[in-house]
Length: 556
Image (cartoon, rainbow, N blue to C red):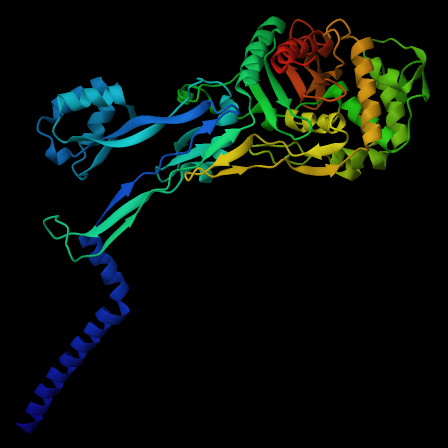
């Protein structure tokens, strides 16, 4: 009998200890997880969406702003006539009825989104028909007052993997964190009936709207450039083209345009390849425009001078290769500035030999080729330079006149700007100011990265470029009374390890007024069909744009 009592007591003691241990486990070890589950059941949260920041041109004209929009959602269990609802939704929202039906016929879902970024006019139609089980949530969508102007530079807003708004490409992508702001929320405890508990926890965090961007981009200059570029592509039968206009002293981008382009509102209608900005992401062989950089490097190293002469007597043979002038003309004894004036390939081989291989590579790297410029735009790219041990004698010769090396248009204009501004390499930038919600304005200061050329060397090469315009192939194009420093370029397009003999990239780079440049501009045309030469395609387009900019800036 006594043994049985001990047994019963032992069983009760075992269960008592088991219960105590279980309670201890719940109250100590599982406290946080149980508290979280309880809060999920009693705490109700609502999100206050932050408004995305706007983007303005240099004169504070809006380029990208927000306009009211709505998210259309459905609660299938609250619908009365599902078939009628599907029909009306598909008609009002211009959606395929099969896709709407697929969303609404999923009985497992109590809430399902039907359409996003629905405009106010369409939302008003839904409100009038007042369909049971269909609701609207206020949202916003991007609106472009200037339509597709500067689309490559601005980028667009899409959805990330979590379904949230996110900027892609251009400014929208690069400044996404600044533009998107921070969502707010209200979290409060509610009873099973959904009523707030007066003594319960309540947390309110207000939304912080995104910051605004104010650009260095001049809306008028951008309009001029896009208009002239479109007409130029048609006139010269080019497959595509880019124009960049930049302040040489600061690196501020005044205009950047490329075609073909896309419409950010209807971007789904365009192949994704259109989204990339060719001015910063596509590369080309610069051809003769590169000559001014090699010349400036040689002058800076005191390897050549303006009064030095060169005997341009015929082709130059390097190993199994023969280098000729572009037009098969040779001028005998000429001075160094005339090498640029005649755009002499054989003359540039002479300049490169004077500079030396090590110095030539050093300046190519110092000018930023092979590296990103760090412009404030998403998706910038750069072609890589070949390894130093892969440079052969013929490579040093051809790079002297811009073949065998690739660059983006942005890299090229930044390098030439170092001649225009007296020798300094600047960091290109699009945003000049960032405006916070409080009204405080943060000014983005220009960044001078390093000095490349002495002021004297830059001035001498600048004068050579002026003479190249006034005495070269473009002498009939230049505006009267204004000194323009510039250089044409024509490069064959490399295809599958060799150069296409018919297709070229035509270009012209220049700045004016030469003595105190207001802007530096690079024009590139891909595969012009009326003429392969930069002097007959890119150069006329450059001066057509320049004439309008001279009037706009009132350059005397």
